[in-house]
Image (cartoon, rainbow, N blue to C red; front, side, top):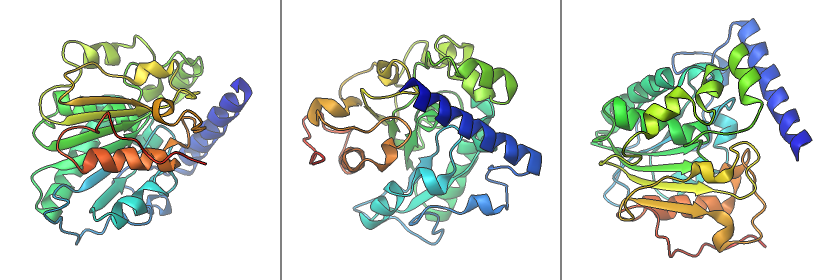
Length: 274
């Protein structure tokens, strides 16, 4: 497993370095071909209906492009009736977390302006599940987000040793996602789930990037927070960190969280794989 993890990180690192050398970015302002949205996303004429009043903003994980990261979940959300929006940010999500959160703030404002919605729902993967908490806590997002669903989020960081060399070379956000980083100390000091959104965390015991997997879990009042470990309800679920957004069981939990008042229902039993 360690060799597979190392290879995945090295491939992502090489891709990021190549983008930099070509002068390409994956930020919302970029007009490059890399900004192709996933299927179902970024119909800026979409208007939420009464059954799906909040548009859904999808937030990528580190080294991810939106078209790949949300290839399965974006069309599933669209088919379920949601207005769906996605964006690339922070030079393949390597910029410091506060900068990324400011990009998210601006993108949420664009979505709110286009749809007329007072609030959005946010579904994020890895860094994209943790970083919106910075937006909520420090950049005025608390009254603009109804649901925040984190899929294998790096809420308390990772002990993965690759975060350090990547962080000191080209990935400041990797340093921010280390266990004990100044960023995470600031983010998790006091209330981990500030009043405003409902919080759902979805993680897997097989996480090979956020180590240990329990680092994803948050503390807070049960009426506003649900921590979901996939294997508690589906013991044979094989999904790991990188492809978690493509897990049909994850999709069921996301739809459960978005489709009800409050966070995901802890008693919900998804249809398990196989």
